[in-house]
Length: 506
Image 1: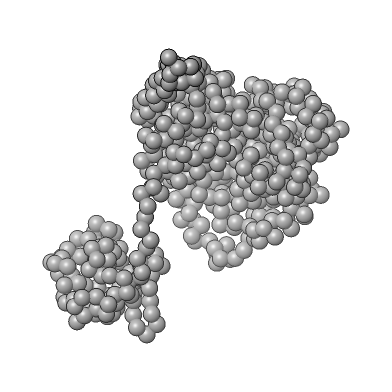
Image 2: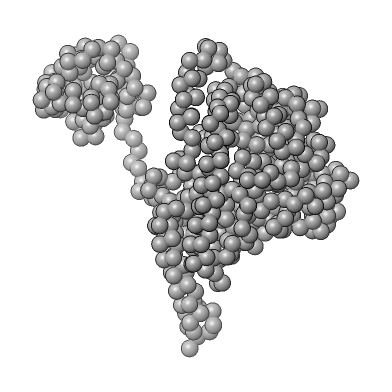
């Protein structure tokens, strides 16, 4: 028989000399299922151009007979290939090879070395990184550090849930049981909140986005720390507000400059981390917290306290929401750093009077809640092994912090502070080195670094770099870092030579 649109083709050759059923059976053992084996066979023939775009595949019955499998196995294989876009069905006619994909440009595979170091730089590089990339600049733990066994167990249990849990929209407020559990967790930090003051979100980022929609108008002014988490900059930029940065110290924002900014700019909002500050790892002191709230009250300032790293603390730090009682402070968090970044679930704890309007905004922008994610998070937090998992993580991070600090100091890096907990180490580079240039050179060697100006609105942190100590345990990182430092130093030296750099000509 011949396939329309192709050269004449003998159907028995569709077995491609696989030794009849024997090799197919071997493929099935290797791939896991007969369905996977059939799919691989079709893909291989398409890749080898034996089946070209527009070619008709064998009928389900004929393919099943030739491969000595059931018709249901072929149906499933074809349906999966169709779902991937590799083949397409024509009602009453059969399945056909889809049109070829656009050629993949090799420039789309590698890292973008020419990107400007801005609030998106680290995110774009880290999120798009392939398996060969090392990521000491990213903001999350290695997959091997996460609680994979508990996650799989919770997923299996969730698969046995009732139909409504698996298929219906969730309540806009979110799971009552999870909100109740969150109130008990916040009590551990001195924060008093009832379940009706909590609304679940898809992430910590969505929590801030909802609050910005609720509180801000384009042209309003927002205060942030300098440096601060780069996605604060990106998100506030999307809301078209004016952003004013306040220099951050080892005990919190510079309180004198904070007070001056309140007078000069009349800001509507201040966004910060009170515990385990990103990127510095610093912790807000009680004295600064009290002075901050005292300044905020007469200025009518609302504070968003992002507490995403709460479970990494060895000793609980002061929480603005605990001192304030939700008069001026809104408390947010999520679980991507400790449970799974793939399970998107966060929360907002706010004044009761805000919850109805925030719920309306959530319905307008996301409709129902992420029910499956909330149920999964609830199951994981209720599991008695979560606390043990976090204890082990804290010990592991402490060891990684000591090891990474020593190795960076050996290269001439100077930690800004010694963090009490968490994964971040904010370091000053050796004199004369440019963090952005260093990051670009490392990126060319498949190492993603986090240069300081990605975190600094004032662009005053190019002599700094943030390291994620949990991602710094591979020796190759320090080899690449040392080589990139040497290249940067050589370039700086050449630039200063007469006739080459900025010191005149011979």
